[in-house]
Amino acid sequence: MTHQDLAGRRALITGGASGIGLACAHEFARRGAHVTVADLDADAAAAAAADIGGEAWVVDLADTAALDDLSLDVDILVNNAGIQRVSPVQEYDPDTFRLLLRLMLESPFLLVRAALPGMYAKGWGRIINISSVHGLRASAFKSAYVSAKHGLEGLSKVTALEGGAHGVTSNCINPGYVRTPLVEKQIADQARLHGIDESEVIERIMLTESAIKRLTEADEVASLVGWMASDHAGMVTGASYTMDGGWTAR
Image (cartoon, rainbow, N blue to C red; front, side, top):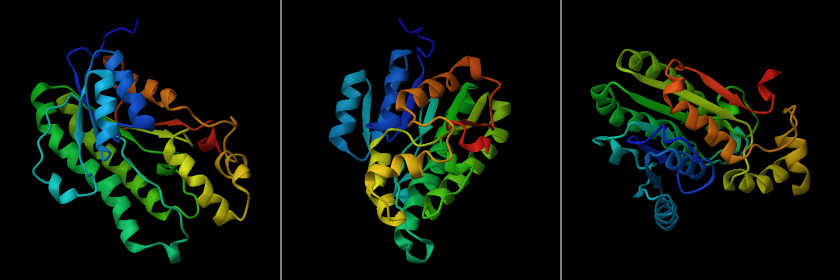
């Protein structure tokens, strides 16, 4: 039986209907939190929310103008929603670049902005940003993704500095490649760009910098997210926690 250490807490997870977000939704629900699953996919969000006894918020987070006047009553905010597009810089579609920055940097800013007044009033809050090893390192063909994640790191640290006096922490988690639909969709693109077979992508591209030669599992990331949301992590803020199999040790 999981200890109900998040009982009474309200958590919002973006991209919560699949992958890391869904694993986090289950982690929080097991620990007693009321979870809102925010996702663009209405059916998947509804199914995930029903499974954990939470609620669904169907939202297009790339429509950032619609979030300007948002107010959120949450104790825990997990900024997880993201997409990936790979292409050389000189061929990268400008609208796609803007889309990734809106979804993975602007919308986290607006959600944090919407959540902080309530957190400050309560004197407690957790901002947890699912960044990436690409928030700390770069890889070819990922200009938009790397730019967005590097920006998210900065946003998280500023939020930590401002929130510390109000009982609010802000941190990033930096996984390597996680076994999710997002990663699985990259395999064909990576094979094309690098001129190799799809069967070679995981070993030769995704895991080449990792000392541990396997993909990270979503529930491993969720376990760290759960700890960061707990009172045990009250002195952890402004940090970037790697879960990358040793990638950034190089």
